[in-house]
Image (tube, rainbow over the protein chains, first blue to last red):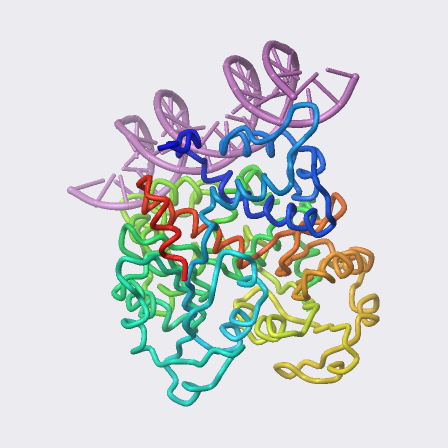
Length: 227
Length: 227
DNA sequence: AGCTGTGAAAAGCTTCACAGCG
DNA sequence: CGCTGTGAAGCTTTTCACAGCT
């Protein structure tokens, strides 16, 4: 009933990747008590072109008002809904080193939509410690944490050497979405969704563009600038 | 002379974004003393298709041997060169909270190509502390750290609220490449290259796909699964 | 015989520009 | 009149499939 004429479930990947950015920009507008916004303004704060923004939003449905713009609250709801953020997703963080601790106490989860339900580490020495009011548990706790039917997101924040083993454990326990912060490409079976965040990859991409900037054919500068 | 027939300087963005992954896979092969590798094998460890890998590499030049494969050492060198990693790039990290400290001591920089030259924080209380043998300096140190002619990469690891102000300071000091970890879109003038890494964006993209998986029209499950 | 390098086809994404609605 | 929503055009990226080299 009311079959949710939310159009075809065909949102392009490129669009999905930008929706979180729109959501954040809308959040700022909400904080400033702005009621309505034009595609031009919203696009600017999200750092994209207005044509792209309108095309992206058109994949979710027709939620703007011609001649006026978009209602901030309603658009926020529609994007949240499209992304599946109408309820909280449980998140398990594995690896409580510097990075894991930073992630556990990072504001990123505070964003509506996620809730850290467990922190795991292999090291018996730190099991029992608390980070942000959540106790660190041993890896063995994993199987009892994941309810097969219920979706759950696993975050890998271990050293590169353990990343693949941890990924295998997560998959075996039934986790079907993994976010990997380890400096290592990991293999997951088909059906498991995996994304990777990697500092050195990002730096290397920046280095490439920085190098292009110098542009010219002057390779000597490269050697001289080393230091 | 030997004008480096390195083909046209036209490496597609999509290719540049994958080169670091190939470099990492090659690093693992080197560690295992593997001398030569086929496109099929290398593509598998980097998580892409072999056709894509070959097309990508073809933009750098013709460094494979037909019927055999690629020489691991030589290909590593050629990709490093294409990315501009033949010398170290200086990196300045701003914001020494949990995240900044994690980044400062993260193995990512150990990867050939980058060297953390300074850690900055606004908080007088922690200025002078050391992280990984490098002292934390006040923001004012910025201007003397950046040599106008010399390229430098700035990493923003501050709370969202300070991110834009820090970006402005970096740009004013002459930094032309910025990697932003703060949960906030920042605006930079044209000519400055900016990349963003964001936990909640990644989680939201995973949430979208996880939601699609359940697929069906069963929205009731969504409510029930909340907890 | 085997694997790379690459044109050509297909798919996907972005930009344009304007019809259509409020 | 102004701004959204969208076909159509243009551009980029991926995939295919095989010629060409060792």
